[in-house]
Amino acid sequence: MPRYSRTLIILHWAMALLILAAWLTSEGGRQVRLNPPMLHFSLGLSVLLLVVPRLIARWWGSKLRIEDPQGPWLNLAAKIGHAVLYLFMIGLPLTGWYAASRMGVSVSFFGLSLPALTAPVQGPAGPIAEIHQTGGTIVLFLAGLHSIIAFWHHFVLRDGTMQRMNPI
Ligand code: HEM
Ligand code: HEM
Image (cartoon, rainbow, N blue to C red; front, top):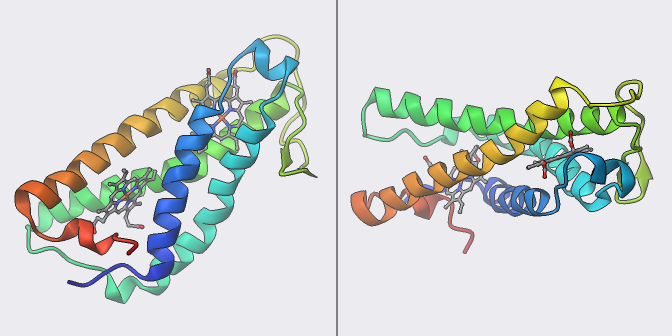
């Protein structure tokens, strides 16, 4: 059974854990201004940092990419689904960073101060912050759906899809 490269497998599972941890450490509204969730910022920014080597590793290994014998439509659907997940891995940290800047909260990555992405405002943080809050929860649903499909492949279709991402 062909497998994803070791780098992609490690990054896949590390990022799944980071996204879950970012979600668990998230806070909204007033609380963010009063007591900024620095761990949330650092975990979320780790996703942004790791998506770069992950995309490079994916592009590098593109010739090894696995094509399923399940028909072109399902292959296309899987590709679009994975692309949407990548969009969230990039878009969520960036909108979160922007939201924090708009709230006047300084952002740091495990102690390293980062510049603000926009000028702070008084009052509501605006639509980008709302998109971030909603997107932060939507990603969990999408990842849940993605893992249900993976388990479907494993237990029902028994086609070894899960084996490709097996870290052991
Ligand atoms: C994969 C990464 C991330 C996920 C899954 C995520 C998820 C979330 C969620 C679910 C909320 C809403 C919490 C609530 O309303 O109780 C939230 C709020 C927030 N997050 Fe993130 N986040 C991520 C990355 C980041 C990053 C990198 C930053 C900043 C550098 C950030 C800054 C914020 C801020 C400022 C809020 C409050 C927004 C508001 O109240 O209007 N997030 N995040
Ligand atoms: C328990 C949770 C998860 C399970 C069981 C799981 C399982 C898998 C499996 C079996 C594959 C290989 C699919 C194939 O070859 O067609 C895969 C690929 C992939 N998964 Fe997950 N996954 C989980 C969580 C996540 C999360 C949280 C994300 C990101 C938000 C994610 C993003 C991806 C992407 C983008 C791919 C395509 C290959 C790549 O570019 O690395 N997965 N996943």
